[in-house]
Length: 448
Image 1 (cartoon, rainbow, N blue to C red):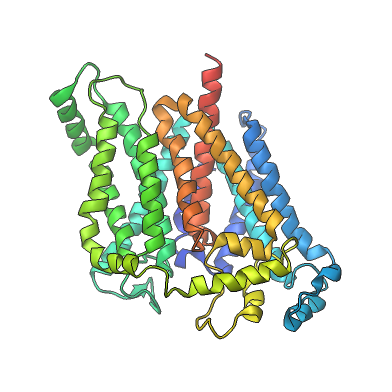
Image 2: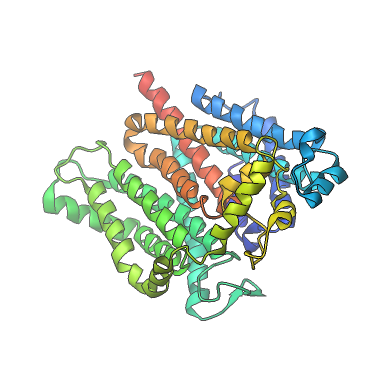
């Protein structure tokens, strides 16, 4: 199971971040095979502890997935008349709640695969050492993709693997088509590396040494035993900046700042809290030092702001569409079918996504179903927050689940990174590993 989990996380970003339906289907099938293998291994596997908060979150997500399948089966009823002739015709053609049952079925299965993948990763992390290794591997994987993207960008090559870029030619996108999605991916990896750096430095802190000796020993240990770690952090942070993604940069910086606050613990009581110092150095290096590498382009986009961004013109139209079917929605995955009927002359660019996961979910799944997902995430975040005190040595990994969700939650306000499998599966793995570790730390604390 370990190789299958690592393999999926490592390979999903390769074929254009798996944004195309054919690749999404491949990973859905892969998760299905993993689930079958897990079922055969459950007899020998140790008992998995599922805290009540996680079970409640699971239940809400399960209801959301079931609702997606229900949109394909339930008749549309009288609520189909929404005042737009073309939309009424779409409902009449399908005869169901979803205006495109095929797309809704595919999207419901896609969501289900993430639900199953979360369960598999959670069950895999039966020991805390497995969680540490998984987070480390996630950071390394992102670092490798960041290195590839940096090499291509620095060489002036305007390709994505073997394809010519059609957009974002001045930005680093790695194997991704969309620079904002790669920024989200790089942000997750950067947080994994920082969390692992906290864990590693705490394990290397010498007993009974303070001040200069303490600093010198830790620095020497990092340069000789983990030289790749600061290098990977700097490289990934640089790649993030070179994406020139406004929302990606801001959301990642907020998440990293919170991670630096939550990660220090009282695991080793020494005169100098090296973990806090190390985190502060990393934060300063990212924000001040590396910003100069791409500051002109990114600064210009930040100053430009959102006044000329078409997505903000589209939001008012999307809200009108939501108001027509606020409860049942138009069907998961049907945004493109619906938005082209509502758009007007103010929108001059093509929109196949809402550029806001919250609005798109409200449009396609309905407001109540969207609320289920939000409440489920709040429950998971609450569980992780309550587990921070008992994390001690593993506190940074528990905090990682919180900050990774905060990063994508903020980014999803104005983008669709969570719809990209390379980002969504990575996030599921991080959140599941963090939740599993929190559950085990909390259980160990209760048995003392």
